[in-house]
Length: 327
Figure 1 (cartoon, rainbow, N blue to C red):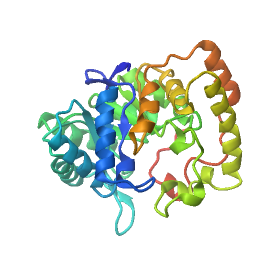
Figure 2: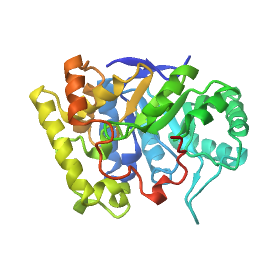
Figure 3: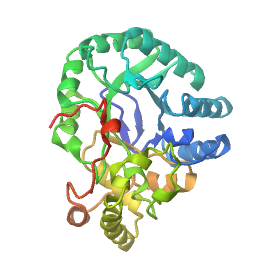
Figure 4: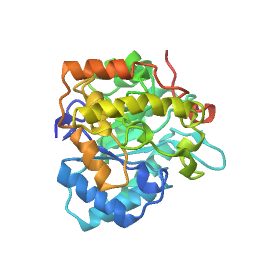
């Protein structure tokens, strides 16, 4: 497993981490025992960075991680997120009071007194990002967090925050079918010394051994209303990715491994955090942190899945609220 820095002066972590939203049941049923097996497998595979959030199951993901940490010695670097209010209506709150109470709640559920990384999950646009950055700096000074980051922000917002204090990481969706960060954000992270953390790098399961079946999605599954998983877009995407899957197989690599290796090849400051409920899938994901794709392989991947190949927006209009658009 490659080791990469979680932001300038941040800890070294495995280039492939683990996104823990799936522990909350968002992508299908799971239980604590299965999640614990996945976390134990992560340690064996060199997957040392865990990414969770307050709203993943309204604290369930953090609680499951916390129960594992209580029972096992670990060497995980942990990131969690706050700033999204879900009830009675979905909104964003980056106030000092909300971020502090959320952080303290996360620490309690995780059973720790410190996390390496604390993200603002979505920006509250009415509140200057400089003000939010000052709030986060206080948490660093208090020893509650090692550093802070932002999710789904623009390059200009990142630079504004970094002018106040170093930003440890920025998290955005990035994969072969979601390429927007290439239009400035990956570069901006490199310039300011922040890690770029790619979530959904295996395209919400599309690069698994078999394509997911939308008919089986639970009503709360984020893909249920995602344009890329709705016909006729879904069938077109399956066809395109099937050709990529066949190519990966011809190279004796799983599609998930190849997709992750491609993401990591886009910059030495990139860390990928695929999400999975099972240790079997995690093994394929972790292998992406050890594979170096050749120039010939990169060229063929570009032919099979060129930028913009995906049919449908990555989010529907409701899901897109809170994401900073910059191009």
